[in-house]
Image (cartoon, rainbow, N blue to C red):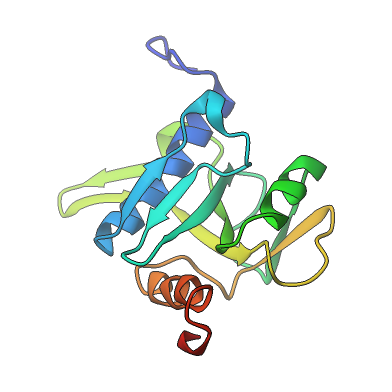
Amino acid sequence: MHTIATLDPNTAKGRFGVAYVKSIFSQAAVGFNETAPDEDAIAVDGSLEFAIAAARVQIKCSAQFKISGKSATWDSELHWRESWSTSAVPVYFVLVILDYKDPMDWVQHHDAGTNQRAAAFWVRVNGTGAPTDKIVVPKTQRLTAATLELWEREVKSCFIPTML
């Protein structure tokens, strides 16, 4: 680890994941209100602020998977599932995958700019059937700015059923 580090490796990875996802939300010009660290009682890291209402987002970041492939599976905790099932608005689980374990490889700086060497994938975790202890995140569901148009339609459908 680096001599200037003040975060442990898992915390650094978690912060990177949130920052990565927030950069995508910013690209789409949609605000994100992050849940304070000790206030995540409903198992979400924040709310994505659409005009009609917010969607809830849980973010995890890992270097244990590869960006390529068909899916990634994450263990879910019972209290997460219980919290998500009570939400009247969509709850999305976002998995940020880092292809590199070393934090110095997560961001690449070069003359033309800076690249974040990661990818995020998502799955809705409420209102889609019986929740299980495994969250399967399909890699066909890449999180991009365009994804938020679908998410907004799903939020609207909670209030205006014909919007989906």
